[in-house]
Image 1 (tube, rainbow, N blue to C red):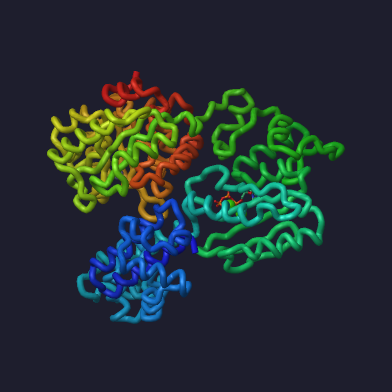
Image 2: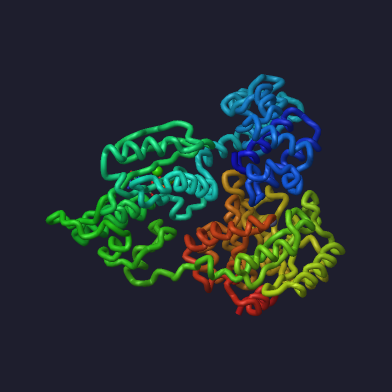
Length: 581
Ligand code: DGT
Ligand code: CA
Ligand code: CA
Ligand code: ZN
């Protein structure tokens, strides 16, 4: 069992304990342990024989160790299994509904013995939810809206979930006789912020011969975590894995690999436009090849590069294939030189144990150095975020001193002393001006009262942009993918103001956020607003997530020049403190 699976059991146990109205301390201990295990670079499976090492992990005490030992010995956790027997697994789905907490779920269960989505929806439509204690018509209507939202976004997955699943499949097929290449295509390859189903392409000798292909499919369906087979055909097998994701695996002959990559990478809109272009030029483009219309002679198919070249286009990176002008630009040799991860010189949004991070300044600095960064910034929370132990003026100043101390001792990396300060409801910032002035870098973020009117939220953000101490607006729209929509506000107005004041917008790389999104990033570029790509790391292991941000930046046609943290250290320092040149 891997760390993610263990964390999954512990998270579920915490949720079920909450429905069970257990002691809050106990609930938290499960959640803390789950978080710690999720963030642990080493597999617990490798450590479990040495209890001492497991106990060294912050957030795991003696009681939790016993639980972990039970998981490895029995393959299950009895607390978890008992709770699932007492309640219903469907309650865990209900918890995903925005605003439906464990207490309400428990209440609905005890009043109506209903525990599933359809059942709760029916109760709400019949006006039975409003009759429960502390509920009313308003809460009932909200619940119906939340169920609708859940249905709308349901069935899609975060980019990192899809990537992990793709890697598992690639790993499973590595070294299988007759398999040469296993490559993700579809929305994952395009780096879309969420993925519907996973498209995997396989080439090699094993794909070209019926008997061998059957053996290959027999092997594929032994994939750990495979739940059920949806379709098994000659050229394709489709199945569902634990967690609900559908996977389409296709088998291809090497001579048509490029054509298939092109076709199955999509997007559909890009493919349609490309096919029309091919027809106009006297070709037909399919998943097998690019061929002449008159004599069916194949002119390209082995590689994508050949296909684009034959269509007299520069190679179009997958992230741009959305039919948003890329074909025109490729024809005119006007595609942008997209930013790459190696352009990033520093990650400037991260938290430490001083607030809700899991590592120290030194540990974060070490990790940043390992990433090859020339600089970084520690930006812990401010006091408005009480549950994160946010800093007040006094602690913020002390923290700055500590950061400067570590910076002075650190070799090879510059550590900026920063803050992620809350933007309060009226647009003022959560710390005194004099304290903010002391900072090398100020990220201003909204973390509360997301339900203000669009006009109020616009005012709030404009005021934060106008504040002379603000360098960057953090995760500017507040969305959480598959969970919470962006708070509505006038994006154009805020971007215009930011361009004028030279306040940068963050691209937060956390797969749950990816905020700004690709569309808004492109808009920001049009307005002349610079972007800073950050991870918002709360643990050293989170710094890797920068790649998801890079993908979105590329989807937005951003180049190195559009992103401030590609600048060398001194230029970056100046740009954040005094505005870019
Ligand atoms: P998703 O799965 O919703 O995140 O998005 P995609 O883009 O991965 O879409 P998907 O899985 O339906 O198909 C993968 C690519 O294959 C798609 O971008 C274009 C191509 N494709 C698949 N099926 C069709 C089809 O029936 N017609 C056309 N024109 N293209 C298709
Ligand atoms: Ca797909
Ligand atoms: Ca598909
Ligand atoms: Zn934040």
